[in-house]
Image (cartoon, rainbow, N blue to C red; front, top):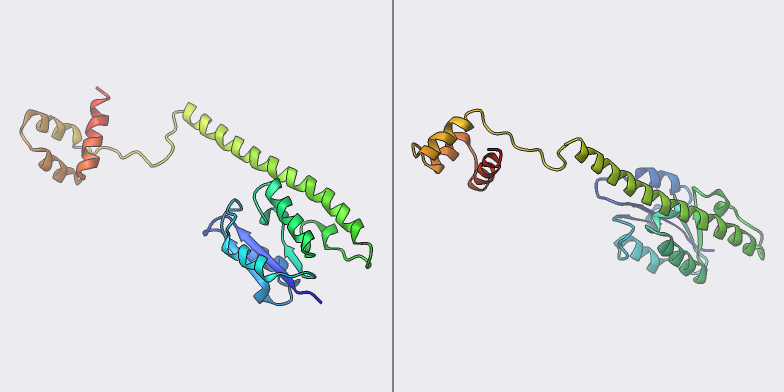
Length: 201
């Protein structure tokens, strides 16, 4: 009898694996067979996933929460699924109930056919959602720029005494170093602010 493995993945180190872990932990043979990554699905060399591939054998089963945990795009996901099928590894996806069903010996072809159709649709939808998210982000940035909203680091406000000290500096009453000391600004930032200030004249 084969081993039941699990694989969980989030895209960044800040994200949490707990939700996926809770979803698959009761299906695996032992918690030591759950492999994880905190890495983008675009990363083909994900450490946890590579260890998983080396550990699984014919007759084993792999549980994942959703199909996009395997990769970021349809072609990549289908490549992995084809590899698992060739090696005799059953993939069960918790978010796709039909993949979770067991079938009588000799009828595996039926469930595989249904799974293939569902996976085709699901990956196409996932690809489209990524396109939609990117489009919404681009539209949001464009709208923010149109409203004159600054994106990125906050703009540093000039100190209240800037105008007075600037005039004294330009008149030669104080040095640039003294100017910087009085407003607590580093040299690179100071000259950047001078350039921005003078551009408003």
